[in-house]
Image (cartoon, rainbow, N blue to C red; front, side, top):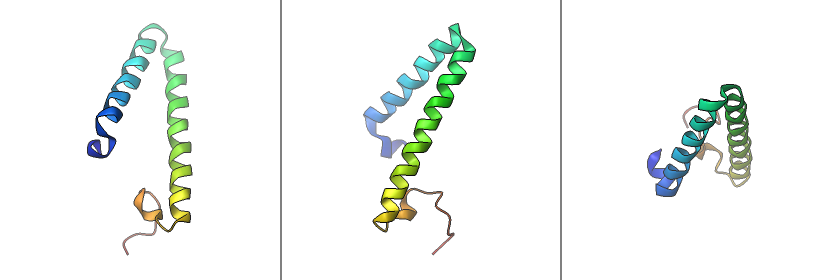
Length: 70
């Protein structure tokens, strides 16, 4: 998975976690809310991308699409 992210993606994830850690250090409830928003954005993006890929016949490439082994 880390190979698919690339260097910029890994730095982005580290900055996201670091920023969330700084917020959690001061306001844990606010950090929990920000975490939920980030997870929501990730799930929305995942759904949009997997829907787009399945429309091109590539639905099995994102994982979690069901269907079992082919």
